[in-house]
Length: 201
Image (cartoon, rainbow, N blue to C red):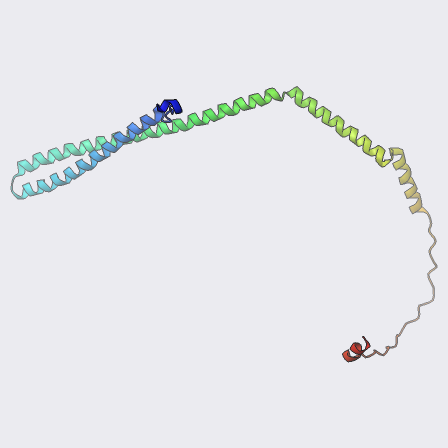
């Protein structure tokens, strides 16, 4: 009945996600195995010491051989863990690369659609129309402002040069020395008192 009211949701978990999960689970199991074997190695080492104290050298030697074999298994487990981690990293990085490629593909398709809408000919046509509109507006501005032609500008410059070259009459400079002025100090009037100012107002 649930299907009557809603669609079945698709899982967002991909095959790559499942593979990564399985690899991580295997890695975790190997780490648990390593921990268990490391504890056993410690117990066997302690037991081998006890056997040597008790004088059971052959039994201690057999136990140390067993310990050595377990150490080799530990090394192999460590190599397998490294391989699993490298595989997980490779898959995760490949997923990132796929996302990048998908993004590039979407961007490329978008650019192609935009190029179809705006062809080179269309852009050139718009630029030409814009240039024509700018030129037309400049001509209108010149007419409205009553702008001068190049001949007018040249005539104005000639007149300006003629004016600056004319001899302007200045007053004659006196030949006698000027008298020295010794201004007498004028007495400074005392400032009226505040009371007088208030009374005056």
